[in-house]
Every structure is written in C-alpha cells, then in structure tokens.
Length: 157
Image 1 (cartoon, rainbow, N blue to C red):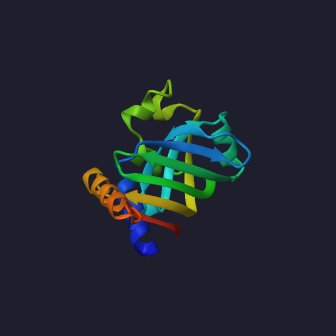
Image 2: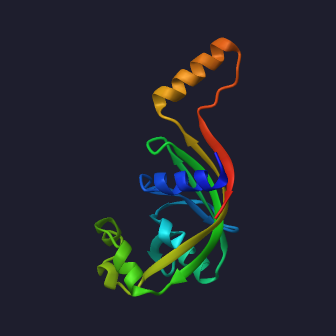
C-alpha cells in the first residue's frame, strides 16, 4: 500500500474512532476525544484553557496522538503540532452534545479552547477484517509463513 493509500485509509477509519491518547512534548498521555477532519488535515479537540493540553496548544508544542481501535481496525502513532484555533465557525462545526457535557455554559463557556492537532508524520497499522486476519494467522502458522493481517507503514501528512 502506498503512502497516499495508507493515509486515505487512516482518514477513512478515523471517522469510526472516538478517542485516543494525546500528549504534548514533555507531558504524560491523556485520553482525549477528537473530531477528525480530512479536509482540514487536522484532528480537533476541545479542552479548557487551564488544562495541560490547553496550555500546550497555546505554546504551540509538538505532540503525539496514539490510536488503538479494534473496532475501526486502526492502530497509529501520529506526531504533529498543537495550536489554538479561534475560528468560531469551526467550533460551531465540530461541537457535539458530548462536548457540552464538559462545559457548564456549553460552547459559550469562556473556558472552551478549540485545539488543532496538525499531523506531520506517523506510523499506521490498518488491519483487515477479523475473519480474514484470523484466517491469515492460521494459514501462516500451518505453512510456517509469516502472517500479514493488514497494511502497515510510515506516512507523512
């Protein structure tokens, strides 16, 4: 699979992933829900201004986002940069009822910070269907071959 194909698979499958582990340089990973937007080439997060992620984004730190999703058959480690976005239209576009649960005054809450994660590079494992992967594992074990349950590679965004 080419870099372009694997990148397309990444974005397609991210639509079925809700949460990953985000960490800015020098901080521990924390679970964060994202909004994937292929057209923006970005993953969007909502946080409060005084959180580590809010402060790290305001400082423009580099970050890593780790995805482990058996349901979406996607596993990835993505490196990129954080920034604060002030575009109200983007906040309106990605806001969801789940986001509202975190802020007392909803999207009008003065503590809401829209964080953009701009991927730069990553390593992606996109597995095949469970049945196909199990069949491949079984046949490779019986034949003495090596299993290949899907696509794997390094990509640049």
